[in-house]
Amino acid sequence: MAIERIDVDVTSPGRNFVTAVVTTSDGVVGLGDATLNGRELAVASYLRDHVAPTLLGRDESQIESIWQYLYRSPYWRRGPVTMAAVAAIDMALWDIAAKKAGVPLYKLLGGASRTGLLSYAHASGTTIERLNEAIHGYVEQGFQAVRIQAGVPGLDQIYGVHDSAPGGKYEYEPAGRTAAGAPLRPTEETWDTRAYLRHLPTVFAGVREEFGPELRLLHDGHHRMSPIEAARLAKDIEPYDPFWLEDCTPGEDQSVLRLVRQHSVTPLAIGEVFNSVHDYQTLITERLIDYVRSSSTHAGGITGLRQIMAFAAVYGIRSGFHGPTDVSPVGMAANLHLGLAIHNFGIQEYMPHSETTLSVFRTSYRFEDGLLHPGETPGLGVDLDREAAAAHEYVPAYLPVNRLRDGSVHDW
Ligand code: GCO
Ligand code: MG
Image (cartoon, rainbow, N blue to C red; front, side):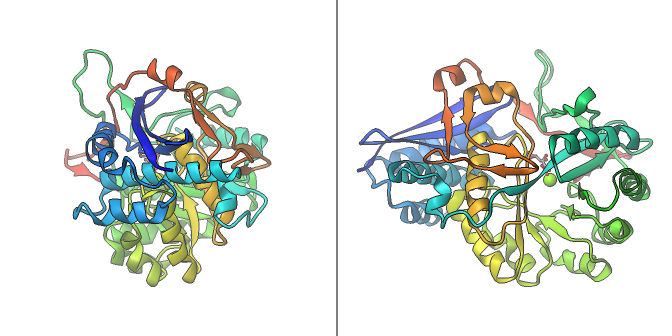
């Protein structure tokens, strides 16, 4: 059989998503996530204009060969736009293969290595009290791990920090939609690393005091620190037994993690902005990280992410796949199938999609007692209601910009 048609659907049910819809000559449809937050249309064009025409008529079962063709043949390798496009086709082909075999995808990837995937929620609050309220909400839902982000005295708005609604219901979108009539550009935030470094250990102390030693606590530094600042933070939070410190420095400078490692035993997680195994080469071979943060959506699909995890396995490094709302339910399902199958799974980020998103993408994964499971539906287990999706038109939305108090642009 062969690839007969490739559609690229851009839809915005609550937020923007790009989905490749691949149809075979015998009528099987596979879905792949190509959502790149704030740059969605670039990937849609890459897929429509440069990928889809080259794949029509090819044998859809040659997943590895098509991956290599898309990776090597254009000459221009890697990069987030390219690899999100490769990811979407790869996921759709795996979806088709598993649907044809009549099995949930994890069974084609080696079968289940565990009963479910330990997952962590995003808890945050402008104060430690509000943060603790949010954590209580998640603990009541069964979460055994939470990412804790808190406001810093003196700073107005920090990316990823919001107070949750009563009852622990907490939804936010990383990318802010532009209000009608407003200039088409990202919002701006002000940052002060010294204030943050002073404050964060007190946040860990306040949460540990409330919840005791068992709850797993994670924190995302969102690339904002210099190497020596990161080393200090990793050391200062060490007494509170963090599960991990994520993105303590911008990940592309791999060797700086040596410095952080010299000063602490706080586990480190990096990689949500990476897109290939080569981005991890130093980090993995020198064991400078403990968790791989990539998602299938941004790292070349299941084939790309499986390559990274096979390499990481040799060094005892585990997965902590990226699972924010900007990874679509299709990308999330791909992460879950792979996570269930590989031996070196660690933890899965779980930021549930809104009801509007889930009314368009129908999922079969489930969350129970702190664990996620991809479900038993053949393929990825996600359906896209294309008619409902078409009613939600693309709306420009951007991630914020971060500046220091003197106005200079900072990592965020
Ligand atoms: C995380 C994140 C996200 C990213 C977002 C960018 O989940 O750890 O850092 O919230 O900022 O996915 O698109
Ligand atoms: Mg992150």
